[in-house]
Image (tube, rainbow, N blue to C red; front, side, top):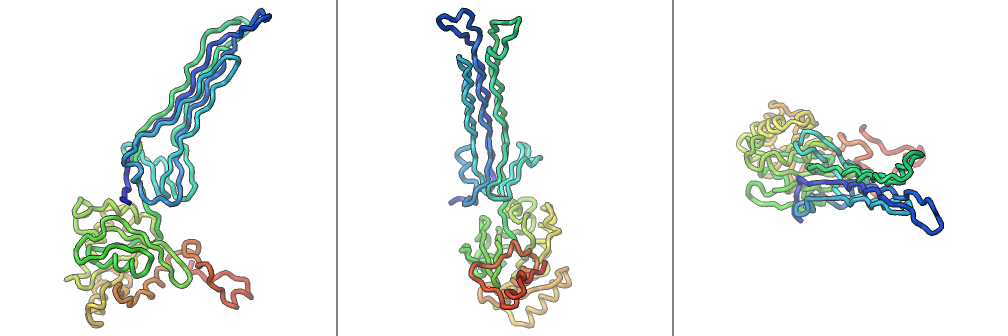
Length: 354
């Protein structure tokens, strides 16, 4: 399946059906009078967030969505049928933006969330509704209110608890494969990851979603490399894991490059909590790893976790730190885990850092 996280689509709600001009003509009824019914309401354009979708690829080849028009009124005071709503399914995490991308019209953060983006037009009045004591045979009617139309942008932001950032070849794909159920491509060259990847991490009876995005390079905010277009997928994360390659000639500089790009992107990424991890420690001795860790702390890191995605060294300590940033509701117990006897007796819930 191809990954598509932006799409521009055209939406139009259904117009209201026209009212009818009709007169009652029946045998033995001398004065029949008007009996034209009203038109039916046009269909609304409704967007619904559904599970099971993680891309906007469905909107690549189908970009025009038009709801049906309401039925026209008929004689014998029959009202036209209302048109069915046009339901458009989008992935959870989708934002709907105005055509100029300046306004967020809807933000789908939960499954089943439903938003009426465009309302259908009301049906027109039939001539029966114009009858008065002085206008006994009206012939006027309304054509029905036209539907609304607009172009919008759909932008997908993956919902993840933790984001993984770093330079190309920092070992992010190996790391996410080691700690989660993801199967990201691994290669000895830059930009093996071309699209964001999601993985579910299970650690100490709790679980969370980890997102890996393509590597950032200096100038990504100006479009260098893959650019910063995928940074939107980690805007909703609670904490970022900044992975730094120990084999880089200057790990402190590598850290600063990524930090500068996050700050240039904005959207609150520069203020998110960070966990700095010095990766690939299996390629260096302990003394060198400690020296680089000290340099990273001097460069602004609060704490550095030496890890190896290839061997698993230091992974548990890093994941312990990640759980400290997640509330219990986003890092829940796995089904089948047993509570301790003390918890059963006291009737208390498992301890949470928040």
